[in-house]
Image 1 (tube, helix red, strand yellow):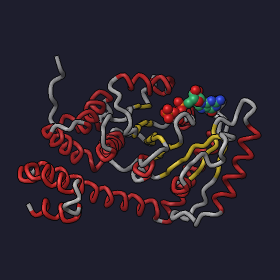
Image 2 (cartoon, protein in one colour):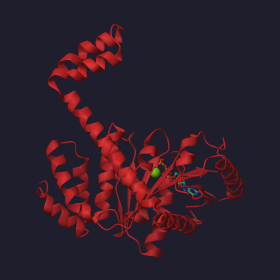
Image 3 (cartoon, helix red, strand yellow):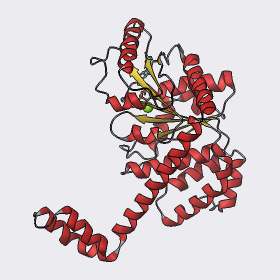
Image 4 (cartoon, helix red, strand yellow):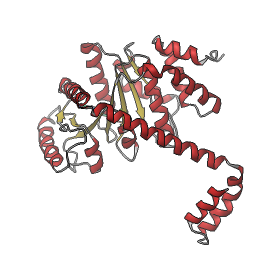
Amino acid sequence: MPPKRLSAAEYATGILAGSRTVLGRAITLVESTLPADQALAQAVLQAVLPHTGRSLRVGITGVPGVGKSTFIEALGRFLVETKGLKLAVLAVDPSSQRGGGSILGDKTRMPWLAAQPAAFIRPSPAGNSLGGVARATREALLLCEAAGHDVIFVETVGVGQSETTVHGMVDFFLLLLLAGAGDELQGLKRGIMEMADALCITKADHGNEQAARRARLDYQSALHLFPPAPSGQVQPVLLTSAVDGTGLAQVWEVIETYAAATRQSGYFAQRRQEQQLQWLHQSIAQALETRFYADAAVRERLPTVRAAVAAGRLTPFAAAGELLRL
Ligand SMILES: Nc1nc2c(ncn2[C@@H]2O[C@H](COP(=O)(O)OP(=O)(O)OP(=O)(O)O)[C@@H](O)[C@H]2O)c(=O)[nH]1
Ligand SMILES: [Mg+2]
């Protein structure tokens, strides 16, 4: 029998009391595309809103297999064990059409955290649009904050657009890199390096240490060619091994120093404010698009207009104008 449907107030109370079950169910609610669920989800978010915003939001990106999950497991363990922090791990992977099985996948990559009451792990919502996945993750992040998590990690694969999306929802954005993986810059778009608040050469272990140090110098000089970061902070290049724990304390120190400095300068609050406004405009654009395509007149006329555009009888601009006037 499915669990009883909760009211918005019951969800909010459960989340604020730190119930993992209610938090998990609330995230399922924000991931749902059913209109009734969405209305309830918005009511829940509104109710917990005063209790959000207090965590440190950290994005972790890097090419597939670079070691993001293992890194989060190791850094997360350090934070739980030595700092006594409560953390949540979310993911943005728009390519994933994975169902419930993925929960197991992500949790087996973070076995220690998965067994901790102080850590909450949630895999990427499945979805075919990055916009939809991003919305669900942003809302899940707020729910996790309301549930009292001090640090939220958001893992995303560094290929395509998802890293820009995650950059738009975090306070600190960390790019993981490998040493000696052929091309020094690993085909990374310059934009990702510019967006990063720190770079981290990982897997600096098992004989790979020297290559890692060399890569660090290369990335340091590459960064010198870029304009200064808008945060006004230098972008450090760090070395870590998630396997033997090297460098994890330094990574955390860099993140904390960054947070303190940008809180002081006002950049921290400014970045969050800009993210909120960006989110507002994305929400408007998404809602308009949904309404546009749901419109009966548009649906009726669209196939004809598409055919005319495809055949070159009508310009896309004129066609869009015609449909919008409907
Ligand atoms: N030697 C060594 N191996 C590592 C380290 N970190 C991760 N690995 C290994 O690298 C492989 C990939 O690690 P993951 O953490 O799954 O990488 P990921 O970036 O999360 O991968 P995706 O989520 O698939 O993009 C695994 O076999 C890990 O055991 C490290 O610091 N040192
Ligand atoms: Mg991973």
